[in-house]
Length: 151
Ligand code: HEC
Image (cartoon, rainbow, N blue to C red; front, top):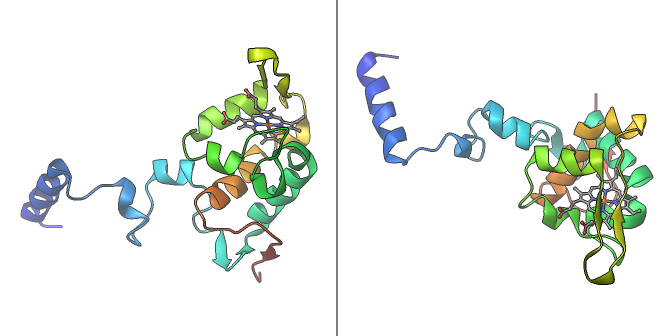
């Protein structure tokens, strides 16, 4: 691009009128950071029609997390809604809790998030599980059955 355009662009960025994080929402290329936090971008091809990776993430969620965190991570009396949690937790914070677990012994409660650091089928597919939950949290996938994109 011509140098003067670059200057205009730099000025717009500085003025905050163009945000890089918003690029994906505007239909532009998502930044690396955006893709890290929202790995489901590019993995959804229709209403609840998703890539193999996202599909498998949902399946593993069902195997390992559903019994406490409920249907599609919406929460239950045993454990909080991960759909809500992911509105404030970063991907790294999410990973940290899943790997190390957490105990909340406040006020006599006994709510324990088990640690999955030693569970190979969770550790190998942590990105897929996160991808599924983040897609639901962002309203890009709805609770309920998923189908695979045609390959
Ligand atoms: C035995 C029940 C149980 C299972 C199974 C379980 N969790 Fe949890 N999880 C909990 C409880 C209880 C908490 C809340 C702990 C607390 O209050 O600190 C929690 C908290 C979390 C949090 C932190 C939420 C926040 O708002 O800070 C994340 C993330 C999480 N779980 C992810 C998962 C994932 C992913 C799986 C499956 C791989 C899973 N959990 C399986 C019980 C469970």
